[in-house]
Amino acid sequence: MSAETFDVVIIGGGNAGIGVTGPVRRAGLSVAMIEARHDIERAAQHRIPVGKPKLDWAALIARAKRI
Image (cartoon, rainbow, N blue to C red; front, top):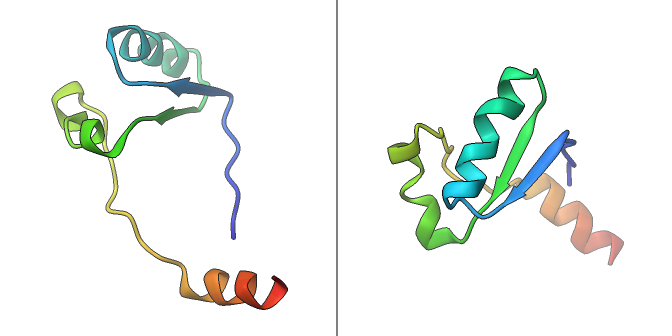
C-alpha cells in the first residue's frame, strides 16, 4: 500500500475547510481533505477535483500475505 504525504490535512469540507484550502495552496503547500463519502460528491461545486476510487490489487494481495 502506498502512502502519500501532505503539508496540511483538512477534516471536513465545510465553509472553514474550503476557506483554508485556497490560502494553503497559494502558499505552495499540498492539501488533503478528508470528507464523508456522501459529501465528497459535492466537491465539484467547490472546484475540488476528486478522482474515481480504484483498488490496487497487487497491494491488497501483498497486504493479505503479510497478515
